[in-house]
Image 1 (tube, helix red, strand yellow):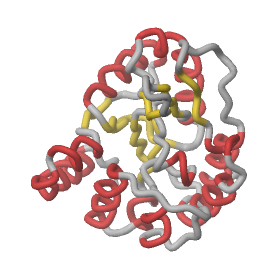
Image 2 (cartoon, rainbow, N blue to C red):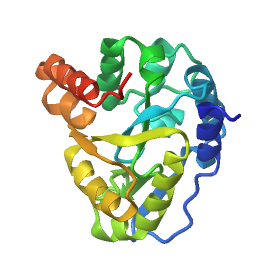
Image 3 (cartoon, rainbow, N blue to C red):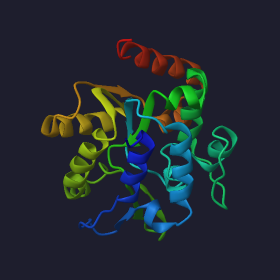
Length: 233
C-alpha cells in the first residue's frame, strides 16, 4: 500500500502548468526548475509522512520563492529545514518570514513529528507565480492578485485540489491560511464540493510582518481552532 509520503512525492513530481498566463506573470515550479529540490522534499516526506494515517489539510495561497520555492516544502525555508526538521537543504540559504510563525506553531503543538503526524500543509494553488515589476525584478505574486490570472489557473487549481484530497486527507474540515485566501477557497469549494467546512485563519506572513508582538496570542488561536475541529478519537 502506498504511504502518504509516496502519494505526496508522486503529486509533486507530476506538478506542471502548461496553460496561458497574463503578460508579465510566469509560473514558479521548483520541482522543474531546480534538480536539488525534489530529493530534499522527498527526504522530508519520507521522514514525517511514511505511513498511511489521514491528515487534516492546511492550505496556504501559493508557494513563495524563499519557502517552498527553495525547499519544495510549503512554509519551510532552508533555516527551519536544517534546524528543526534536521534535514539537509540546498547549497544556498533562505529566510522566509511565514516559516517563522509556522515553526513556532509546530513547536507549540509538540514538534514536527507530532504536528506533521496530524496535519499536511500545501496551497490552494500548488505552484507559485512571480510578476516582473517596473524595475525588472521578479517578485512573488498570489493567484488571486489578478482576476485574469485567477480565471486562467482556476481549472488547474480545481484539478489539483481534487488530487490533494486523494493523498489521504480528512475532508470534513480544511484550514485556510489567509482570510482572503479563504474567500476564494469558499468559491472553489462551492464548485468542487471538496470540504465540509473551511476555517479561515490569518496568514503567517501578516502575523510576522504586522502583528509580531501578538505572536503568542495568534499561536493560541491557531491551536484552539485545531482543537475545536479535531476529529473524534
